[in-house]
Each structure stands twice: as structure tokens, then as C-alpha cells.
Amino acid sequence: MKNYITETFPPGKRLFFSHWVKLVPLVCILFILATPSFAQKGLSRVEAEKLAGKEWTIEKNKLRPAAEKVWSEGVIHLGKYNMAIAYRAFGEKPADGRSLYISLHGGGNAPPKVNDQQWENQRTLYPIKEGFCIVPRAPTNTWNLWHEDHIDNLLDSLIRYAVIMEDVNPNKVYILGYSAGGDGVFQLAPRMADRFAAASMMAGHPGDANALNLRNLPFAIYMGGKDTAYSRNTLAIAFNQRLDSLQRLDPKGFIHDFHLYPDKAHWMDRRDTIAIPWMASFTRNPLPQKVSWVQDNRLQHRFYWLSAPVETLREGAAAELSIKGNQIKVTKNTFKVLNINLNDKMMDLDQKITVLQNGRTLFRGKVRRNLKTIKRTIQEYQDGQMIFSVKLVLTGDQVTVKNA
Image (tube, rainbow, N blue to C red; front, side, top):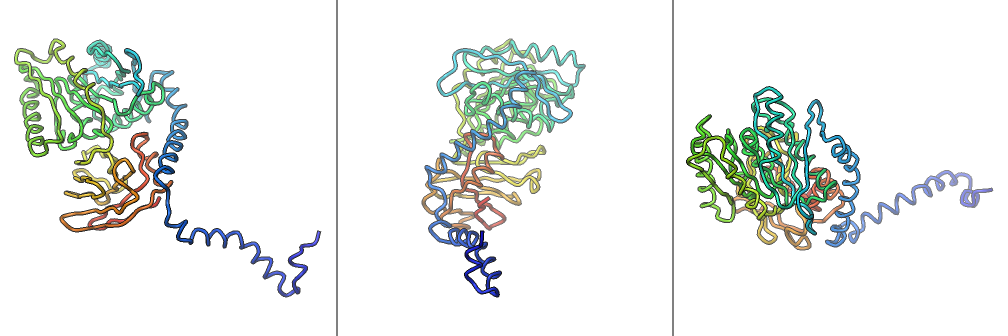
């Protein structure tokens, strides 16, 4: 069959026109993308919400085989670390999903059989009326068994898998621990505060835990007045006083509860079981209006609606931001690069957004919701309650909009 186009042009022009015809589809696409009505429109709120739901379902389906493997084997693997889990469901599942209690055992710096016994004992300590309880066995037998670097990723995975396998409500996840498990709660709760609805520490040592990160996480302390080993009792009092001071300065934050039993030593005779109903009275707010974030020596790449590129993270970096209406106020920021992730539950993304720092306007303008940001934040957070369609990037005193 003859080519109609090349046959109707003189021989000298045939080759040129043939190549031009091949470029027509590309030219048309570029023209459409350059048209303002397409380039500037972005996603509507409804479109963004639908796509967020769709992409989160896709992500959960990707995670499901790994979740099923862990639930079948009763062990979660991370590199050279293996963490066995004992789990059990209590009560009827509520319409909005189960609660999840992660309960950390004591022991540490002891032979494996001692920590095994502590793991088994932890399963019997706390009566739960409703919820799914996971009691993990620490992967190591070191003194800091619940706050080594690998623990954060293991707990992150446990939460995701419980959401997938047991219909856990991610806004009703709680962490508690006794003795060395309490040491772990003191460290894990501040640096992973955005994963939990409440936390309870029993008979542990705070170490260098930073209370500032607990601004949006209700935190309870249970301690025997005679628990003098490693100065646990006096340090618990001091940590509670720190929370008292922070709450006086910021009355809407730093909810906490403190119980010192003067006649008890390291074992509190189960008086700390009141922690369960106390924690159950709280649900997580994944998008609080104000966030205070200080980087621990175990670095985290996300904290509520703030995040940062992994390669830029450093210990001690701090940020404090708040949202009121469509205004974002930066009170403090020493992060090299800080991402401000936004969605329509936080503000009206159809209106202009303002970013202020030290009384100076760093940014004012409209932003576009986009699918790339939705996909990227789903991968970053893997949490259906923390999906964002807009990302602002704060570098020094400059704010840019990232569309990828």
C-alpha cells in the first residue's frame, strides 16, 4: 500500500513532511500541557481525596503479602534482626476498627532465658477490654533492647501490618512497657509520637529522652517511690516536672498523668493497670495544629505533617510550626531542609497559603494538589491518615512548592 502523504508531495519534501507528521502527537501533548487551564488547574479536593484512597489501597495490597507472612510465622524480620510476636484480640471489634496495644517487656542485659521469661510475663500484666495486643520479644538481649536503631522500623512495620491484618484503627495505637520496656517507652514515644494515641511508661529510666516531642502525645508515668535503682524514682519525678512546665507554657499540649506509689519499689503490684483505660480515652490527632519536633540521635524522617530528606537529617535539629486557618507560622527551625506537608483536612487549599517566620512573609500564594505528592507521601508515611497532596519546602528563609 502506498503512503498517501509522501506520494502527494514532491520527492524533495517527502522526507521532511514524513518526520513532521511523526512529531504531531508530541507537539499536541506539549501544547495541551502548556495551556493554562491544564497546567494551573491541578487536582480538585474531591479528586485528591479519591486518588488518595485509591493509592492507599494499592499500597496496602503491596504490603499484604509481607503482613500475612509475619502473622503466619509470628516473627518479623529486619536484616539480621528477628522479632517474635505474641498477639491476641480482646472484646468485640468497634465499627471504626480495633485498638492496638504494643506492650514491651522488661529484662535486658541478661541471658536469653531471662528475657524470654519477661516476654511471657508481659502477656499477663494488663487487662484489656477491647483491642488487639501485641507483645513483641526484643530481637537482642542488650541493656537498651527497646531503643536500639532497628526497633523504630520494626514497630512501624508492626503497626502497618496490624492495620492490614486486624483492621486496627491507626488513630487508636498505644504503647506501654515495664522496666526495660519502660526505658523503651521513654525513648520511643517522643521520637515516634506521631504513631501513637497515648503512651504509658512503667518503672523505667528516661535517659536522654526529649519531652518536647510529646506536645501532642498523652504520656503517663507510673513509678514506685522506693524504686531507687539508677535513680529511677527521682528521674521520673523530674521528667514529670518538665512536662508540668511545658504544659504551663502551652496549655493545649503536653497532656500527662503521673503516679508515684510511695510504698512500692520496682514492682508496683499491678497498680499501673489503670494505664489501660486512661490510654483508651485518647485517639490520635494525626494532623495537630501545632508541632514541636526535635531530632533524637536515632533520626526520623517524618513527624506528623513535617518531614525532611533523609540525607539532610542531623541530631538536635529542631522545628516548631503551627497552623491557623491558611497561615503557617514557623516559630523555630534549624533543619537544613524541612518539608511542610498539607492536605484539605488542615486548611482550604483552594485559597492562598501564607508562611510566616519571625514576622516575615516567606510565601504567599495558591498551590496545586498533585498526584505525585500523594504517591510520595504514601510511600514516606505508609499511614492512611497521613496522606498529603501539597508539599512546601522550607530551606533557610526560602519556601518553594514541590510538585513531585
